[in-house]
Length: 313
Image (cartoon, rainbow, N blue to C red; front, side, top):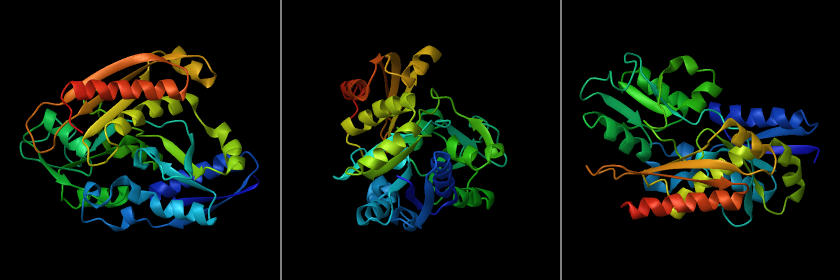
């Protein structure tokens, strides 16, 4: 492949991600152009994603461009990619991950603990809703949709006392200074795939699979495969308040994934119910992982532990 067209959403963050992949491919002597597109997920802002079709609304139009030959690859935030792609499409590679954690952004308050009782916190994620309520049941949590810049504008207009966003997006756009608090995974367990970029192609494009292979991070491919397996086993819908985050247990273990050696991978998962005072269900599992099959098996085991502990998909 010498010439590649990238299908991308047109938000500032999506374009940053596409330009980043473009730079990686250009460094390998490919000619790369961008095809900007607006997806249904970008257009429907007055309803929660869980009520209008889920995260697939962010990828459908990009897949049409791949199917019709108008584009060769699509760059996605991996957490926005459905657990099961439509037939004929594959996830070609997962790039090296940015910070997977959640971040608190507020003009007045430095931490979640500093927010006064009844403070309004904005988030678009059911996962974040249940995790926030587990720590601060006194807060008023309100829906927040739109791209990253739109969410920050709504915060600055005073519609919210604080909002919770993915740290990765803020850092990628040079907005790290707006972060007041980065939550530890113990405080706010990340979503499956959060902070990672995935590249989607048509399954029959073996030429692209070969060209994209050098961009993949093996360690992050396996970690996110385990996370996505949890979500897939639990039903794979953004209407589920589900968190899953995998971490290599030692630096040597993560480094071993640059080759074929096995390493110890630990996965934490959490499940809650939005309209309930029932406590969060949290589980942890660990195993030796050397390939995607083992990573998926670990994620499926964690999902089984969630169900055994009372999680109801």
